[in-house]
Amino acid sequence: MKNRIYASVLAFAFVVAGSAFGAAAGTSGAPLCESVFGGTAGGASQTGGGFDFGQGKWAFGANAAYHHLFMDPIQLGGKVNVNFANNGTATGNMIGLLVGPTFNFMNATPGDISDAMFLFVGAGFAMVKPAGGTSNTDFQFGAELGKRIKVWDNISYRPSFGFTKVGSAQLAFNVNLLNVSILY
Image (cartoon, rainbow, N blue to C red):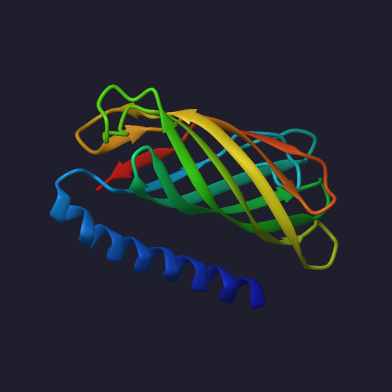
């Protein structure tokens, strides 16, 4: 129950922050805000995600992020991950929050990040309930490197590769193939 309350508070904070920053973006003409939604593909691990079926084991992950362009080419923002994994007998879950800067580079037009490569580096916390274990909260950090590919005016496909380290667990690598970026 406690984890659901934390997740609801975090989701509400992202919506409120997005609305506040979004109102300011309309005055300058250039998109200043970015919302990202998607899923991950990786192994069935504590912090991995995606779809991995075999021998009764599976994993699924989804993420949402909000970044605000405060100084070209740097954004500040956060990313929420929700992961579920089954080890064949029990299901565990993790809700994580990473906050930090995103560095944009190799964009064709200054100020337009809709086609830029990016590097996100963040730190935060994760509420983890391992399969068959008890819940705990751990420090986490991670990074994500990817490329936005402009699809429409303010919508970009946003594949990336990243890693996350939660507490004393091993590094978990993720390939994010299902991410969509909305710039406003």
